[in-house]
Amino acid sequence: MNTPLKFISSAALAGLTSIAYSASQDTHGDMAAEAVKLLQAEGSTSQPMRPYNQTYNPRQKEYPNHLGFNDLHIQALRHLPDGDIDPRKLRHPVHHHCKAYDDGTFVCLMFHSGMKDQDKPIGFEYIIPTSLFQQLPAEEKQYWHYHKEEIPMAKATFPDLTPEETAEVLPKVNETYGKVIYFHHPDDELPLGQPYILDVHSMPRVD
Picture: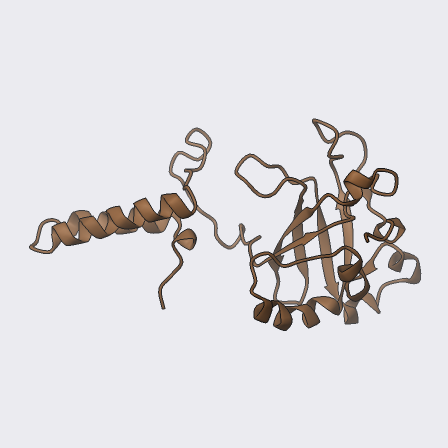
């Protein structure tokens, strides 16, 4: 099965370039070099590649095990602070870019403007399965929202999944609870003051 070009990392392309250079010493070199050029050209049209910061990361090191916040992408309304008093914020989509862990939990970086190179997360949502939620102290449970109820109220979608894939994933996500913690108010240039928990339960329903 062909690998989508948008998932080919800069390191992988660098490896392909090296292979093409080595192959250029034999009779198949031109063909290999042309293949790399095609990959680079098509990759640039589907998802432009940008190297890591050359000053802070001069050798362009990648840590795939620590940058796995692409396991699941959820888009949801009624996830911005002040959504209870500002209809624009209530209806503004917040992107959850989540990493799935082997213990059944997720951690999702929260972006109110997408996940482009210069977008900054304003907080995160910690997601746990229902079995773990049941073990929480009663006082703590008030900070968590049940996704089987919240997903339809927030009109949450899974932008990267087909309808068939969504139908498979949704029952699993439904039986989880989330706690949203923000450290940056989206209206502020910098993260000011104390981090805070967003009371998703208090948000008005989106029609």
